Structure formats: structure tokens, C-alpha cells
Length: 346
Image (cartoon, rainbow, N blue to C red; front, side):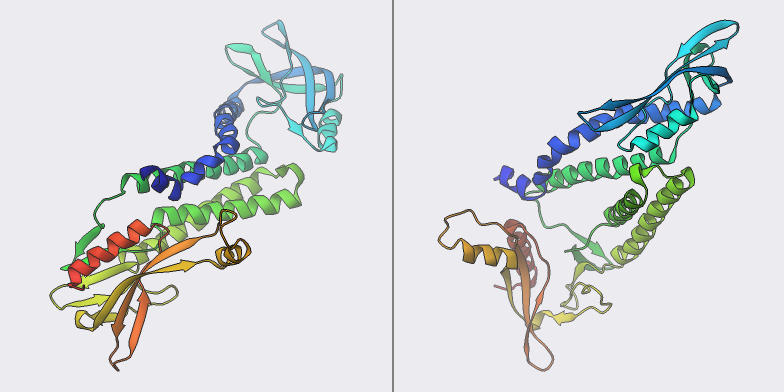
């Protein structure tokens, strides 16, 4: 049972591991190269001479790599270097790499940056570039997204069978039924902004070789949007917009604020007529059910379980309100049983 619950609540994220694992594993070397590029900004420099400048083609990846060699002297000793940057400079655009060959022709004089105390550690292009920050933006949100998905799955698995999470505020009982926490909301908005910016820039600029100012601007915009979304959600969260509120002294319910609304519906306990779980099947599931009627194939599609409150309004009309929507029937049943016990409803 626990395994099924784990898979239901985000365990499918583990299916992404074969694709995401190489990205996560390569993030370490990428961060190390970025650190070295930043450190190289403080390196002293000397003049050097280019001895080799060419393009190397890799037929397996269909990418082109800039290959360079140069000589330079430090304290009267001659050195040979072959590093343009700490990470290999590759691109699918042959013209881009060809431009570097033209920028560093054989025989030309260049500025070589070397590490103090280890002159053999040298390069031609210190400091980060815009493409480095854009790649860091992509890796950051992909890695955090994968980790966040596994964390949420593990949290749901570990809380299986736990009591309904309620808390007291101003003498009333609150139960948070829906909504995304402010931190996750901020991260999602930042991630969506970053993804949109990456998509637009990737289409507009091949290889994402943007200027450093554009890359910094993309980071700032993503973070600002995330912070603004976090602050807005925190206000709504702290105000209890997503909470079902039970006032046991006055004996009434305050239902969660509907999306896009601002007013709570107040229901006296005496007006409550039923508390049930409605099963809602997505349209895609309904179409698949019709197509594969008889169970000849495993049917897919989303199914949600919705605790639904039945009550009579001031005019005596019978009304229903959906309190929440969950994919786990056990969670819905646990909540309904808890609320029935609090209300004394059979």
C-alpha cells in the first residue's frame, strides 16, 4: 500500500531520473569550471603567441570545438598552453567557432592569463560569459525541480495515515485544503519565467550566446517574479484563503475562498445535510474509457476525489460546494470522516 501511495504522489518523478541524472551529475564539473572562470578574473597576464588555431568537428554530437595552442613566458621560463576557457568551447554553429579562429589567427599576439604560483595553468578568456549564466539558470531550476518533486513524493508517503493536519487560530479550527505553499509558488513562478526566457532567447540567439548583461537581466527578472509571487501567496496563505474554518462555539463553517474570489461562504452546522466524496473523471479518461470499453487495455487519465458539502441556504434551497480535490481516495476519506466527527454528521 505504501508503495502505491508513493508512486501516486509524485513517485513518477523517479521515471525522470534516467534523463535528469546526467544533468545532475554534470552540474558539479560545470560549477567547478564556473568557479575557476571567476577566479581567473584576478590572474596576472603576459603576452603570448598563437601557434595553433583550428576547428575540431565531432561527428557523433555534430558539434564543433575551438582548438588553440599558444606559447608565453613567465619569469624567463617558456610555457605552452592549450586552454581557451576552463570548459571546452563547443557549438553546433560552425560559423561561431570559425569566428574564434579568425579572432586568434596563428602567429598573432594574445594576452595570456596565468595562475600565480602555477604559471602552467593558463587560459585566454577569463571570467563568466552570458551563456554560462544561462546554463546555470537552466541547471538550477531543473535540479531543484527534480529534488522538489522527490521531496514532495517522500513527504506524502511518510504522512500516510497521519491525522488530518488542523491548527487553531483565534479560537477557531483551520484545515488547509488546497493551494500551494508560498515557497513552492515562488519557485514555480521563477522557474516558469526562467523557462520562458530561455525559450525566447534560444530561438532568437543560436547557442544562447547572449551578452553578460542580458544573462544577468534574465536572472534578476526570474528572481523578482518568484519573490513577488511568493509575497502574494504568503499574504493569501496567512489570511487563510485556502482554509476550511470551523467555529465550534458559534457552530458554523467558513468555506475556503474560491479561486478569483474574495468572499467566504458561511454555513451554519444546522444547515449541513450531507458530506460525501464525489469522483470526477477527466474528459481524456472518459474518452479512453469509451475507446477501450471492456477493459481490453489499461485505461489512463486523471481521476480526482472531491469532498463535497451539502447544505440548505437561507431560502431553503439545497446547495453543494466542493471543498477540495485530491487524487488520493484515502486522503479524501480521511478528511471526510474527520469532518463528520467534528460536525456530528452521520
